[in-house]
Image 1 (cartoon, rainbow over the protein chains, first blue to last red):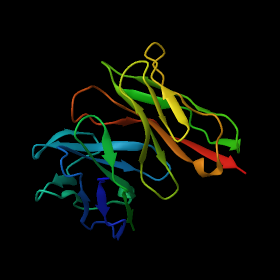
Image 2: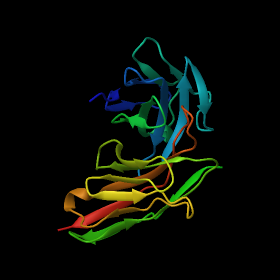
Image 3: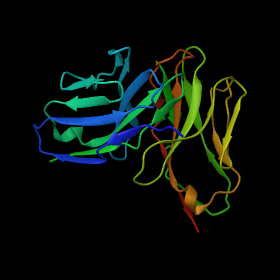
Length: 111
Length: 114
């Protein structure tokens, strides 16, 4: 069964460093998403992406964040200068219709 | 705006007990409704879904019925097992259109004791 994959599973970085989280969505899906979950808290929407551009973003998704689909398979989330409060689990999702399929997540730890 | 409310728990039950986790929503239009489960240290797994009023989603002994009149999608299981211990998230997709972001409830932690 096709699935969304994410790498790395765990990323540790120093505050102020740039990180890139990678996702491979399901191949025939057209819509891509990033969500985050701060430890013990709810899952929050960050951004959705369609037709090579952002279709919707939340107030969390500020200028420090960017997304890109650099080729036909990867979908990346970049945080330019990480802050302590960016420590969270980041989930990628993709959809063809309204059911979204989630990846296993990348745990980002900012020291 | 769109929102999902669910009992926050934690919920602690003995094995074979009956489970109900309440979920209510606020949305415009006709959302699709979902339950996701997150086992310790893992990602989100779709447990079940319902896309229109009166639909019943079911999987692994869990059930939830889309009740438009009460704007609810309560999760139930007749006999829980220790392996059901996890966090359960109720979520909605706002419309039938493509590309709409999900809105998640805060999650309910379930602990099942042997």
